[in-house]
Length: 77
Image (cartoon, rainbow, N blue to C red; front, side, top):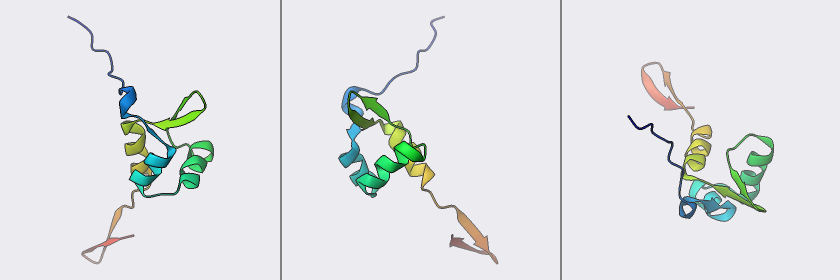
């Protein structure tokens, strides 16, 4: 029985800081600061900071605001 090896994203799937910030709707400086100081996932390829689809999904999840229930009604925090 062959073992499954994890599939890695293709190089074409990676985006740079400018494109990732645009897709996530945040500033480039905030994205760089998040990588350097707040633990945002990223890859360094040479001198470039690059983001895989999984990295972008994790960063988006880190910014998710959970829904809170208030007296029977749903309300965003």
